[in-house]
Image (cartoon, rainbow, N blue to C red):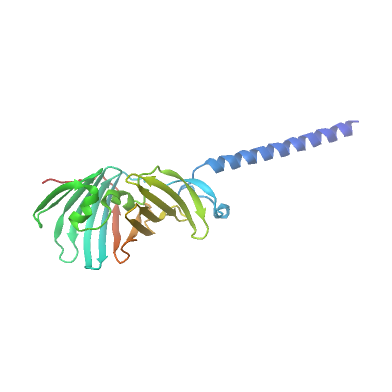
Length: 256
């Protein structure tokens, strides 16, 4: 009799233990499925399959940045090269000192605050204020100044830090799509280390493709960006980063 009771108790204990293990396993899976991943907390490679959807955090850890760049623009009219020192505060200010790479002279200074911009040049005898979108034409440096702060920091444009992505096995990337102001759509692809690898910004008039490479390990910022216009494939812009500083705050002197 005692033996039978002991067997029943043992079966009951084993059954309860199995149920508890399954319950804990299910809770663990649920917790992990809902938890955003990030470069500091990536998903294990063996768990990444085609079509897997996860919320991913792409976050800038530095309030201030000073970035030294060399910008090369190739057009049917010829080639232009500039050295541009950029000082920026996250989501608020972008200041740029622009020099001609060929002759080594300061072309001028530009500042972007929100959608507004200003450019001053002693060399050209010019003082200008207007829209950030028009600054490229004014300076001759054909880059999307309204987005340049985000692009150089490897961040998404006009988006929350945490977005839902779907894994694309064919291209080995995490992909998300969203809309922004100005009737524009943005497609972003992250590599397996969750750094921006490719971005497309499109509107009814133009499509801009941006390729990122050579990520800086300390900051996660790209060291090389290449921009191409779909309507004018012969037109390309290359931005090479030579140095990144993040101590800040930095002076952004500007006056007419």
